[in-house]
Length: 79
Image 1 (cartoon, rainbow, N blue to C red):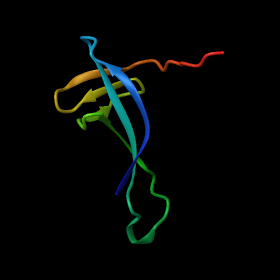
Image 2: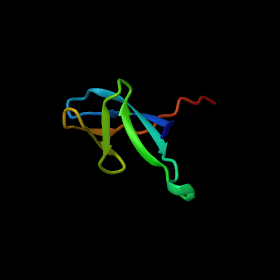
Image 3: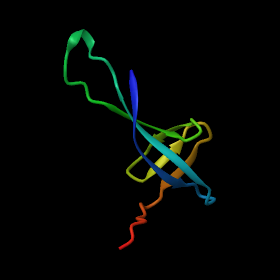
């Protein structure tokens, strides 16, 4: 099974601490050569702790049970 980093974002807990969350897509080899297996998306903190997705903007830090909320994406583009 191979995992590829496909995204990263910041999330905040209720006390305002910011966490860097990495999004991975894992592909599993097809059983008996069957095609069509969908990749599985997993989430981890930058330090390696596992994170479960609750909904589009809410995540649960598995080790501590802390709920995280995704920060809105910001743009640093200048004109």
